[in-house]
Image (cartoon, rainbow, N blue to C red; front, side):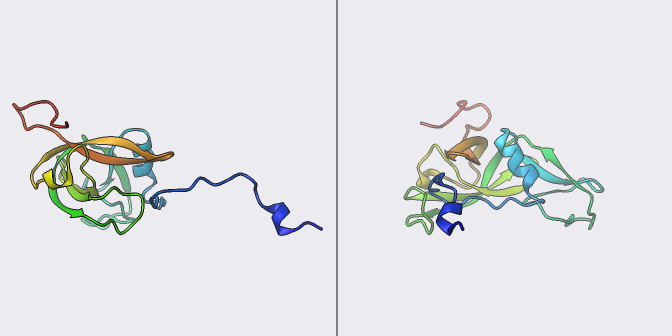
Length: 156
């Protein structure tokens, strides 16, 4: 007769510092793209409407025929907030949460990195970077870039 202790896997589970995204059938293409260094958004096969976050039905036409499109990763800060006391573990204090409007018109929630949270501004041009924030967890974060005619990158 075996005991419960004998049935347990002795391999230690690494301690995660922050919560990880829940991956579903609807979001798998997005997270696979992030892992591969490609930013993907959902695209309706019927009307070509783009959307994020992914959903099981097109918001524009009601179609269930959905695919995805690799996008440029360029955008601007549409909105942002700075948290001085993070509500979840694994985040530096202070940190920003930003809504990024991609050049293709879709908005997504992320974080602007490479500048102090107080320097993030609405309209700031940004570009995606894929960052492993802890072992096995890659996130699409954004860093500021200069507007056309300016410097290449404004990170310090």
